[in-house]
Length: 522
Ligand SMILES: Cc1cc2nc3c(=O)[nH]c(=O)nc-3n(C[C@H](O)[C@H](O)[C@H](O)COP(=O)(O)OP(=O)(O)OC[C@H]3O[C@@H](n4cnc5c(N)ncnc54)[C@H](O)[C@@H]3O)c2cc1C
Image (cartoon, rainbow, N blue to C red; front, side):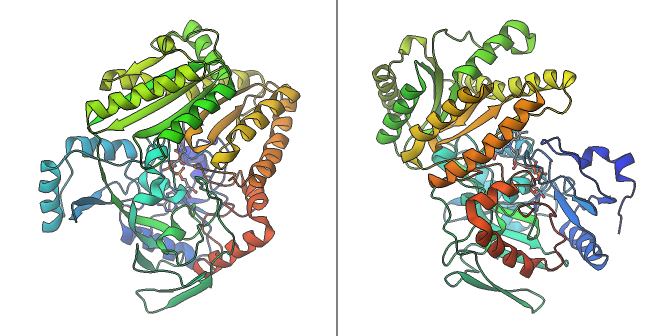
């Protein structure tokens, strides 16, 4: 087994992810195939080594940060293994280290490395080239994420308003368990009976366990194990954050691209007006089935920060001039099949904007791919500006880091949660930038501490919000996962009983508790 020692000296980058937390490990290896991955896990199992799985390390909850033992980094498992066409739909079988950006490029060009592909895959590729363009709908802002990491976190992004999270597109997983046993989990093939399951492994063993009894919040959710009556067992592994097994291959369902993608960024006079606009838009166009792919939010402080960066940093010069005098903005993306349908939707949104105190003359419209790209860049500039600001502050206070929330609440609690955030931040005098997926009642509050005292206050506030959000029927993590940073918040959400029930499931797949040490469970 090709374990590399001296991780701290030769592979120090692999001791971190985007959370910037620093971990420790004794060994690292980079398997390139399922066989190599299984051999590494068998070996680690025999030696009782802790194993932290890594994709592209873009996670921000420290899930890929090792907690001793070994690192299994899957960034060399980068092959698209094949394609299938069934009932007019396309499915891609990918290794976990394929990056979202690389997969998107391959799909856009319809060019894949077909070495080793079977005849069915080659036939499916010919059909794909003749079919309307296909896309992978999950769109985390960070496109250097790996498809394995995205599946392990049940990632999503702005377009989850229409398309949902990664989970909805995973048809099957090839999983290697902690002891090196492999199993294929396919939607519809292995299902729980009520809240208990028995899983037959190819080596003849059977694994059985009750599932957690909790009711998951009816919101966009990426916190803890998925648990529902009669569920597909594949769903247990999606979002399990490297604690139940290593995802060695993923079969992903593709979606035809819409004929047209239009966008509008519009400015509104108050947070209440923003919420009113969201309500009107959602009332007209339901999440999932309508033409709205995304409804995103920018707080007044986010707009102010971008204005400042544009004035002082040449890297931000390309963002458009932001009109003054507004307390927030929304970005809405329309996916439609005809120009008439897109136009009708846009006109309706403009009507809502005007009714909510906005003004169509200050709105930015995008009806071409170039214009849409400009609005996307504006959206992406917010986290970049936040990171720059924190980077500056760290120069004088190295202990500082941003505190970013990832909570979501049910539709009915949107105004309550937005008011909660605003009131608490003002009461405690904390600086913040709020942005994100308001269509799903899921905004990221980024607390920007100026001092370590601010940082400590922010951390306590985070815990308080977790209690309030869970009380409103929400989740402590809608897309980033729990990792090592939010284990206390997961306990707030599911209580000690729920955590114990999750532990019982883990015990069945990983009795030595070597996988993903420190993730989900403190
Ligand atoms: C600027 C920025 C913007 C972001 N925006 C979004 C966003 O819009 N939406 C969103 O959902 N996320 C977002 N993220 C978070 C991050 O990109 C996602 O969590 C992503 O899914 C992580 O993928 P990764 O390959 O980097 O995984 P890693 O960080 O390497 O790992 C994440 C977790 O998955 C586990 N894991 C990785 N690979 C496997 C595998 N093959 N089998 C089992 N477990 C595995 C790891 O152990 C870890 O627990 C953002 C991050 C950044 C830095």
